[in-house]
Length: 410
Image (tube, rainbow, N blue to C red):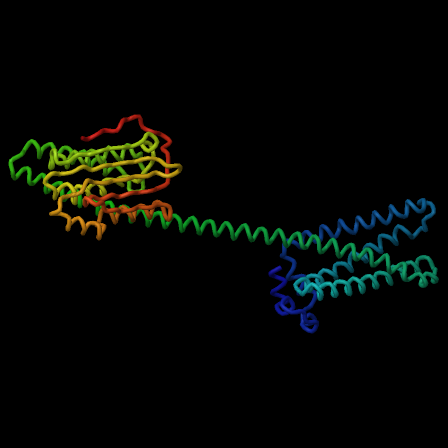
């Protein structure tokens, strides 16, 4: 159809008889020769007119026996169908040109074309019959002959429009599938690009997190060495090595069971317990369903680190860090809270409440990347200067739960 539009650039936008006359029939057939539907046209053209020919012979057989036929009747019937075949071929460019006009205009053009072609076919049929039979009186029966011709070409027109509409629908459906496939590929590429960008961002956040913890721990080891506490320093180095090995195995895009995440936190707290001894106490409360829920790796560690930094370290009496986790419907509820600090460090704790710090900021950004519009994180300051961080994320159950039991630090 694109080829036809290149031949009739004006006609397809607005029907104009003067413009139609500028193009020859040869140009039209050259343009439509490469259209796939053209092959179907010639096949259906042959089938339809052969069918009409057979129906005509069958009608003659029902009304008359072959012995009663005039000798010229079979040849005359074949001749009439051949003429109709040729005339219908000339209907095709008219129908194609008018196809893109408004419905009312198209209908009028189709009916006029069918009426004219039917009239021409009627005259040819009657003239051929007169020459073969010598009966000139049949001109009085022109109306009956014309009605039959009109019926045949209306049937042909309906068949042509139906097939053409079906082919166009198939073409539109194919285009829709191609557009959908292109859109799907574009969406897939866009999602892949977003995933790569998110992974790079999460890796950057993770690299920002680990040096912060490493800096604090190395300072603690340095202090132990300075005060000649070699055994404690050696033990702290071993635990630091175990913790780093565990944390570096996890990808920032990976989700792990909460039980495994808690084990990493306990390993971190063991390191801090070397610093604070009895000043640091930990209370764990995790229900059975939550133990095997999936959470982003290294999610709790920065929250616990904040509690150690702002609640335990500045308080001479130390304090307690509580880690609670439970399932509620299809949600996983996590909470990290501490017992607060003394009045002397209240100002510093107020600073923590007003500025989330690197660790908590990274947690927010990771949750935003992994659970867009489907998470909640709340920071609440308690009356005793304690801090509570609550996280609400979708509950994802592990398909391969571990059988290890969680540790406990008192």
